[in-house]
Structures are given as C-alpha cells and as structure tokens.
Image 1 (cartoon, one colour):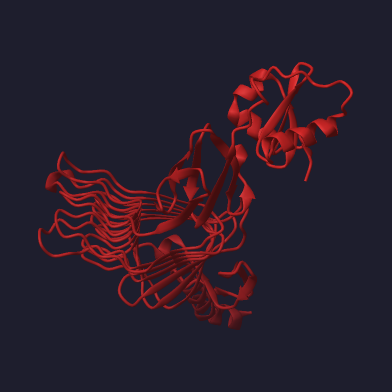
Image 2: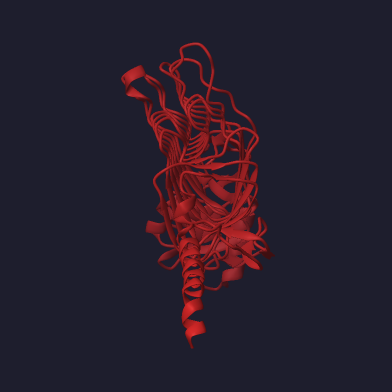
Length: 450
C-alpha cells in the first residue's frame, strides 16, 4: 500500500493533464464534418445524391466558401457577406432558411470567374429558402462595388435577392454587369435598388461611360420569377433599372446580352420608375432608363392578325414580353364578324363588342377574322309563313330567294335565318344585336344545314 501512495501523485497529474487537453479540444471550433448521400433536385428536377457535402453554420458567416458542395439546414442568419470562390454548389435542405446581409458588399458575392449553383430538395411548401440582401453598392447575389456578376444558377429553392444602393437584385453591383444568370426552377424574387435591375446590371451614374449591362440571362424549366427594377437614383437624376436587363443610368445605359425566357412557370418583370422629374423608367425586360430616355424593350412577341374580305383588324404586330395587346375588328357596312380564331381555335367568346384583348402575352400568336353579310328578313320583315310548307322547305326557299347569301323568313313570332350554312330562329331583340346573333349562329342552338 505505501508503494501505491508514493506513486499516485504522478499518475493523478497525468490523468488531469489528459482531461484538461480533452476539455480544451471541446472548446475549439472544429471543421464541420462532410455528409454523404445528400439529396437534391438537379436542373431538370431529377432527384440526385451527393457525397462530401459540408454544412454551413453561423461560423461561416463573413467567410469565403471555396469550391465544393455545401448544405444549408435549419436557420442560419449572417450579418456579413458570404464570398464565393471557385465553383460552389449550395443545397437548401427542406425547411432550411439561410439569410445573408452584406456589409459594404454584395449579400453573397459571386463575381468574375466564380460560380454559385443553388439547389433545393423539394418543390413544395417545405422547399428551403435563401434570402440575400446587398450592402451599399452591392447586389443581393452577384457583384459588389464596381463588380460584375459571376455565373449564378438557381435550380430550386425560394430565393429572395434585394440589391443594396444601386445594386441589382441578382447580377451586378454598382457599375457592374450582370454576368451569366440562369434560373431553371424554384421561386425567385429579385429587386434592384436605386437604378439597379431586378435581374441584370447595376446602376451607373457616370455621365459618359456605359456600365451596368445585362449580361446573359436565361429563365427556363418551370421557374417562377418576379423581377423589379429599382427606381432611378434621385440625387443624380438617373433612370430606373429594367425588371430584367440592364441597370438605369444618368446618361450612358449599359447594353444587352442574350435574354431568353422559355419557362413553363410565370415571369413578372417590372421596370423601375424615374428618379426625378427628368429621369425615365426602365423597360420591364430590356434596357434601363436614363435621365432623358425611357428603357427599350428587348423581347418582342409577334402577333399576326389577318382579316378576310369585307372588313379589317387593327392592333400591334409586336408586343413586349408579358405585355397586353388590344385588337379592334371593323366590318364593312352591311357585314358582321362571322368567325374569329386565335391560334386556330375559336375565339368568338373572347370578344367584347368588336374588341379582342390579349393579356400577358408571352408567345407568338395568330389571329384570323372573317366577315359575312348581316342577315336581313325577306322583304320588309313582315312576310307570313305558308302553313302548308315544312320548315325545311322554308329554308330552301329562303336560300333560293337570297341567292345563297344570308336570308330569313318570319314564322310565327320568330324569324328563321340562314347564315354561314346554319339555320337559326331569333326574336326581334336578339336579331338587332349582331354580336349575340352571330355567336348563336355558331353555337349548337342553330341546326347545321351543310
């Protein structure tokens, strides 16, 4: 026993040192472990799995994410910029919320040759979210001060990006071009600030040098996008930023790259307003405005409208993507609208009087209208039907007397008309209303005699 007592002090000290070392290690922030087999939906919406995915934590706020795969899960809120270096892939876990607010920079800085691709794990109510707010002169996601956007791809998630002062929502910071922006899925809301585009270039208050070009923008897949340009910067009298396109400017507006929209979802783009009494608004999709010139639409949809003989149709031959268009149909005297088709399908039910309105036009359309003689009763409209004749004989007689054109004969309290190869009975009231009568002539309430 004395031997044990004599040797116990060194042994106890050794144990104490080991425990102290373990406690110290527990206090040191260790790198997050990489997870394997993490699910995500690719650009086509197909479920994939990825190994070696690092989870983002609060400790990553204000740091740089280097090339690799990252996972946002739970709730992470950052009050300083996340910088992207290399090719970064970010998976938004279901019910995740990652929020980043830039500090004198973009919210998430993706500039130059660097790239960020965002994925989600689902498309429903539990889809993960990403919110990025730019600091002064920075984009929500993209470039910082005088910084061009890099390569930004969004394949899923609920993404909200708001530019800081003069920055785009997604794209360039102040004076910066939009870079390459591709959106294939998810729900995206992007808003520019003080002349920045919703999606595209930042604002430019230099008088002669063009900055803030749109870059190349693709919206495809099933993405739903709302993009709003920032109103022009009041202090410099600059124009508003485009909803999708280039930023607003005092004088020299940046140019346009390739803008392609083919999504099956909904795209709503709204250009920013003027910043002063002299500034002009930006296009919904196109260029930003300047102090003297309104933005120019970039994407025009073609509407081909043709009219047959004995009438005409007037309206725009091209419409800005997402815009509305009104067409006025004017029959010649003695004629009325006979048929109206939109892309080959009957469109008589879309008429309001003699006007056809197309709302939120996002694809090419073809309108075709024909006209027919307005049917008049035989003689002065007071003819009395011959009781001995059946209705079919009356129809035949009316056709013969009218030479195959529109005709009618009174039978009882209604008049029997023939128009466009169909036989209709009509009261005096409905006869007087050409639109009502003609729609009836093309409905099943009239018997075909073809």
